[in-house]
Length: 129
Image (cartoon, rainbow, N blue to C red; front, side):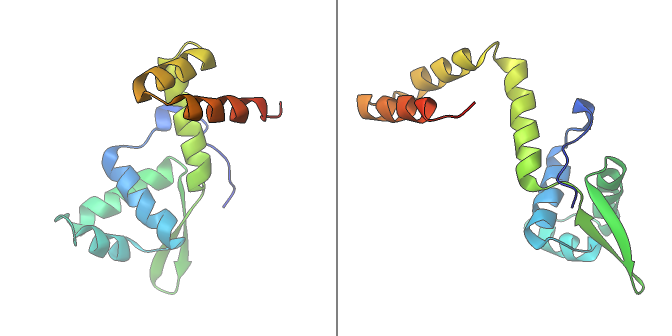
């Protein structure tokens, strides 16, 4: 796993692709059949649909495939943590004009107690730049 982040913001994941990636991140290395079986415990999806998701994720550089005998095995090419960092940063920067507006909105919407606000202040003061 390279630990890199997606190169383009246009490579965001669809809901189904994200579901597939979560199974792959959980397993570390898997096949289309294994993920298809896991998904089908919750909802019915054709093997070909899941295989198409894998191909899409590989084309978007989220997955790397390798042959293991007669089976194609897939591994993540980006960690879940790197994806989350990229995704959250990308979405938040589209919505909020500044970090201050993000924090202000969060504090207003969550009705934090004075004690919780003090903890947030302390956490901000402890940040190293």
